Image (cartoon, rainbow, N blue to C red; front, side):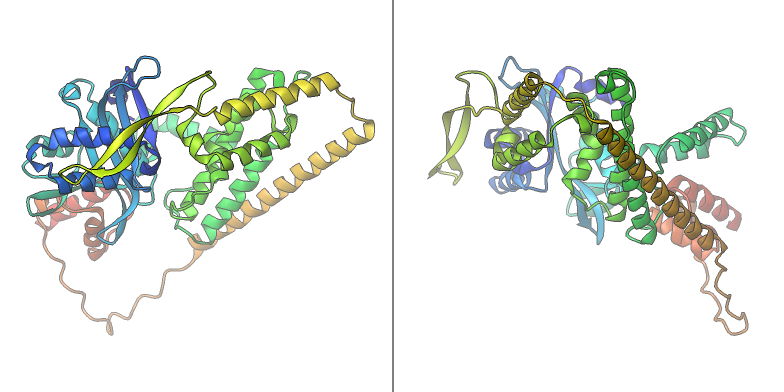
Length: 487
């Protein structure tokens, strides 16, 4: 996220919902009310009903920024963004921004809260299958059109009935580095420093997934397998030393390496499945492995039965976990419920019900874990026998050797596939006497080239027999130089 825009969130409370179905009815009502205040004459009953159903949809993701509240009371909504990933637009997958609304008190301030919200949506879109973000905006809303196109670099995709469809290719940090490298001179010393750092990281880190690999082929499947073995081998390593995982610095080092390897595994799976994998365990490897280790210690040192109990409680109390809970005595909360009646405009009438708060399952499980550990300490520990120690060491060594052998074998297969692909001959060119004359290449102006999308740029370069690899900035520069020569 842009560091300047990020400061807009420093003195605010941020709520994030991975599904609109998890948001409370009162929260959805706040967002619809803000939308109604901003839309003015466009806020028809039909439009607001459409906005509400979109916010409540299970595929909608919501980011809400509020003022700092007092105690358990939530502050007023300053702004929110709602979006979905992997939608289909023009037959292609894309992320789509449905709402970006700011309260009057949050507008025109520096740093921009609107940019902060949009930057976070762009980060999510950059990691999705397409890396493309689209939105619709009314032509009459000139300030919004200027914000998206001038301040945020969106491009016009289409225009229908007074409405603009804008789109933007959201770049990942790796792609930004490629763009910066393309803009620097070849003799820039920074390139040499970065090459040395990349070489050092390659020696010390787990393999990564290249961004130009095809989705769902044998190579990406091989990368998933290799990353999985590397991850399990990494987290199976012991924490050496007399203090074991009570040595916080060594425990943190172990947790960091494990989560980094888990992230490589998760990204390999997402690459192989075109961003459609929602496997919770893989999510935990890169998002929660570090915090789990820092709370519970090395996986060998805690009782798996406690984790299984927690897993069963999570399934049984799924809705409670979404709402949270409390360990305060006598705590209550308000809930909106339908009365079964409607007002004169046809909107359902709601009533507020005060209910006793549920005990937080997280708190209960933590108390049970502490209790189990307390009883285990009271029973005392038994020193393992020499046979048990030797057996454990042999098994650990066998597993480690097996992981290394499998990883080496898979890496060898991957290298061979790369080598075969590099050595494969180009297809035999057709006989020029028999081939039909190629169609004439259309002449392009500089303005037409600059308005092209990535696919159009590549098609124009291919028609001229030029390379089509690289990011949009590279393709644009390549085609402009050719067009200038043609003129």
